[in-house]
Image (cartoon, rainbow, N blue to C red):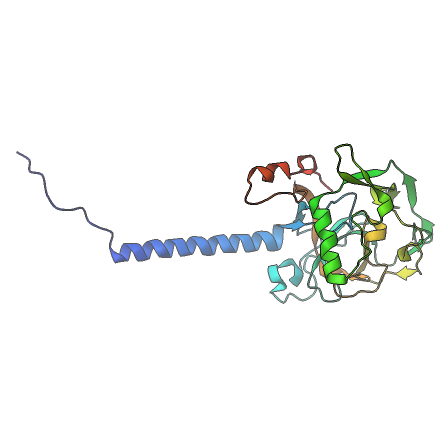
Length: 294
């Protein structure tokens, strides 16, 4: 007759516990290495905090930025940690590319703008018309852009007022652009145009104010290794038309500051979600904007 042993099964030893923790630590190191490589060399997320790239990008859009397009510099890496001299595998952007870069003069913050001028180009604005190498860029009037006033637009204006004491700042730039929406809320209505660059690239812009300081400028000559960048929302963008200042305009940007090229919108929210109310996560999402490429 077989006997049944009353011995207790072996309990995990201290050595087994140590081995499990080592395996878990190795997994975390591999995961960290993978994420570092992914964000440094392949792709990185970016969110839109301002209205400077309307109508293409709205506050609350989240996009992916590809990192390989223009080569790699120290700014390609998280926190700009490695000291990579110059650009490796350098490639020049094209006019019309939407790029993410480290903003002069501090190269601390990530900005997003559109490439307008390349080395050797002469850029000028006359009465709100972009001039490249002496030739006016084609500008065609389109239907007005209508944007619902969202919570993240309200929050962005409040933050500007807090940081810059801009008491006159309005959620629609100026009160005359705000109107009542059919649902009883508010919406912004802006003049919209289609701009076509000399290389055939077209995109929509907003030109909403008369006699804006950026509507008439001197001529800028783009030097070797630099690019001239502008926001699509011409009158609400601090860009290469103005001297670089911390937290403001950017001046003409060194190509070394390029981080990557905008690829696709992967998520968008109107800012109304409450993290304690899960159903608002879905009601705040703007699904129609997901998947828009550049």
